[in-house]
Length: 193
Image 1 (cartoon, rainbow, N blue to C red):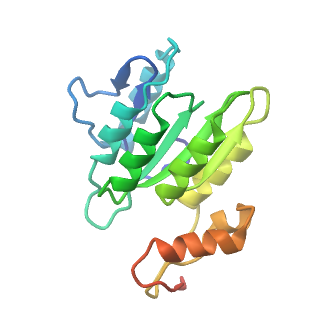
Image 2 (image 1 turned 60 degrees about the vertical axis):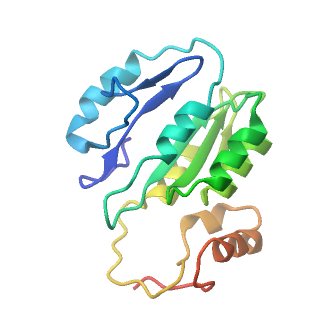
């Protein structure tokens, strides 16, 4: 949350055996302005783990979100990924018409890394894995740079997908490059000036 820029919007959904949304008593998930961040932090402080990882409903709800025109919608899922419906979750992301990019952060000693990596791949995002006791800041920093680079101003973009920090940290840069090309219509790399 600390990496959000003043023009950014955010939504928060907590899930375990229950799905809760910040400042949204019904099923709709509003995108909040940054001015709501103090209330969001207070809300997050009230969330306790109750066990269970019911991911289908919250994932469906965030994939139904629509970004404002000219804005990119990024979804960060933080979980251990211990679910019983992996195939359904993967099919949901793969079949979604959402333009959102899906990023995953797995935290636990027994993270379902194959599910989280595949969700991120299908959602055109990246995956980070952290075990308890391991510093979280490095993983969060890499995700923050990929989701919204701090201090980067793009004056013009030539058509195509342009390189990001994710390529620098991806274990197989050629595979990542091919994934980017496969997920966009122009099938070429662009440049940012």
